[in-house]
Image (cartoon, rainbow, N blue to C red):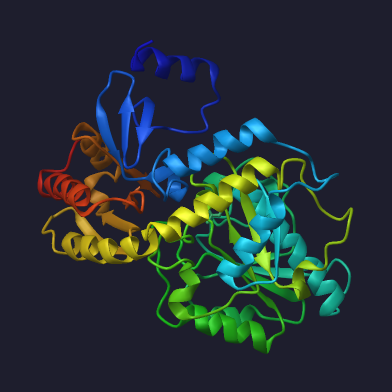
Length: 405
Ligand SMILES: *Cc1c(COP(=O)(O)O)cnc(C)c1O
């Protein structure tokens, strides 16, 4: 079947909850993907940072294949021989005592919410049913009904209510607003250290540190959603490490399995994660041996192959080059590590036509929130491939604004 036929098959039989670029990928390797007709593209979205390690990393795929032939799922009714090693590796890597594994990012966020509420009732003495969690305007934490219920984006919420109470939205980047929202019922703040979906929004320097201090002062938990920002994307293993803070809970997903299999986790110390006793929470697939084995290799290759440092160094280089682009369309260029947002002016008609023009040149990027081109290639990208990508971006930004399809 041709790309055209496959796209029409998707739109005929599938719910239309996405609006993909017109490219049908059939094969992928490293930073490159090929469509059905064999045309080659560079993937500079990297599945929203799930493929930080590059597509089909040979070591991760070998682990997947090997483990798939031995044992894939036991359920947590029994132990399996992959879970303990996964737990220990992640605890040692991030310096925490405990892990709770799930599958998708949203499930791990839900898990952290449950942990924080229980911790608030049991350890802080909040009256039953009164716990509050502070969240931030522009947040993105996934798509469950509870999570979209505290989104500030009407598109994510419309028609899906009624929503779970107990969340208060405060402006992102404004420490005074957090101080004001604080009260004795607040058990946690849940934050993205950089907001990805909102358009690579970087909070002011010192903000996370100030949140850490406020959390300590008010005896509440600081939860960092590092699902997209973490695991090397910003040039450190965790984004919150740029401010040397240690959240009470860290939420991981996406690149935790290098894009081959969904694995997510909540990482923290016993004082919080011990609120779960047998029967209080679970997931049939969470902690399965296939996912655990894959995640161990996915974490190892990030470290062994220097991808975090590569993200730091090439990210700084790319940001400097993109900030020098002289283009009438560009309003702002911001980023950290290999995670760069190029915001175009409203008059251009939006970022989508730029992404379409880039696709024509063989570069795949995706707009986020209408006006931001998100540039986030796999972290193993070479300097040479990055230079090629930057040339395409520079060319498209220098040309007249592309017309929308
Ligand atoms: C992608 C993402 C999620 C949700 O992960 P899913 O696997 O899609 O459920 C949550 N938080 C952040 C910051 C994300 O980028």
